[in-house]
Image 1: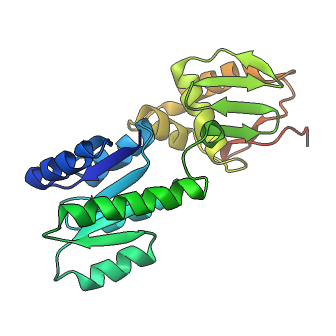
Image 2: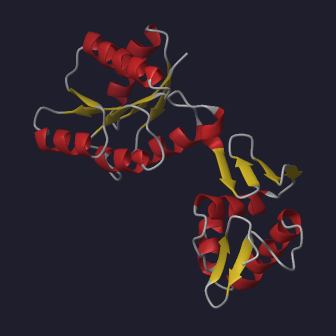
Length: 233
């Protein structure tokens, strides 16, 4: 069963689309803001997004651009007739199609089926390895929240996992203690150096063969920390 995300700040439109899609056997997820849509795409297996262009806060164009940074799932924009410029912009930043309001249920279903068929034929249905992150001998499966180092399972606390994920998403990039603290704890980084240093030490003890001479998690003096692919240089 394919999963369709409907994102529109108009609840009546969301409800109507849900009725159309569920009657065709699709499972639907609902979002009313761009932020909610992005969170659902991360949390659930979504195969296609119906996205309104005009939403408060993060609009449909910006949401599609953000989505395209990490995903190639089909995006169909929902537009008004007066939004021709936005249609072109949306297609240019990665949307696959658009449907003009007020829409015909038959057209909606036809467009959805066509894009899902093409997505499936191109091998776009998410596979397990889409959730894997690898840096050298360290592997993270973000779907099962598991980590291995040199093929051996590693038990991490939730905070350690989040720190490692930040590094693995940006291998070779240097992060200061303040950046790590803000990115993981989502709080102001006052006095963060000691807290971050303790968690880095714990990560090294769990990931490195010799924590005193780390191959992966390294200090960049005066700047912060970075994750590399497993050399002693």
